[in-house]
Length: 227
Image (cartoon, rainbow, N blue to C red):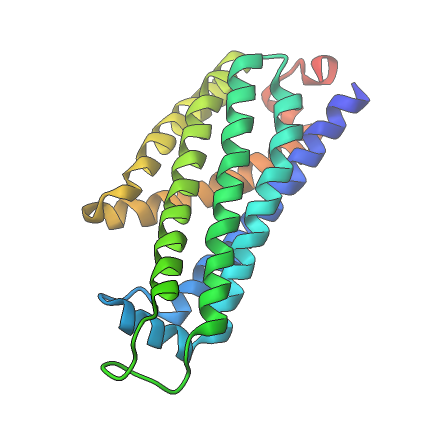
């Protein structure tokens, strides 16, 4: 039971750290105002806000690392309820974290290399910078997609754990996970923003639930004997 409680606590701590990193990275990236119609405009904006964009990239890297770190104890803590589903969710979270790490690293690279004294039309985007933009976007989108699929995989685990609250949470996780897949549609920008916020809330709630034994016992009366 002590080892299982340790798995819950470790998974929860790393999920909360992922939430903290996400809460830093998103506002920092938005503060740079670098999501513009053309790469030239975006690169010029990054050059004018190197610190903010760089901090956003570093925070995204940290969030990727902490998500990977959360995946292993998360799988171990839930495998008694559904070994297959918890294993799939763990693999997906690891892959999501690695993709986020790659996305953050390329954002940092762009912040370092972006010129500070040039604006369009004088500013030209180099081929390696164009590649970095592509990697950052694709890796970030893949990471978000894999996190959504991980939530879908976790939903039957939550349902199997029983209890009305967890079964409602299972449905919410499944719906959120599916909604996160819409990141690939340009027309679903508003949906992406909403799902991003809800996913952040999920990280916080799940992290706290796993860190605090009393919260688990309130939702799962048998938690003190099974965990």
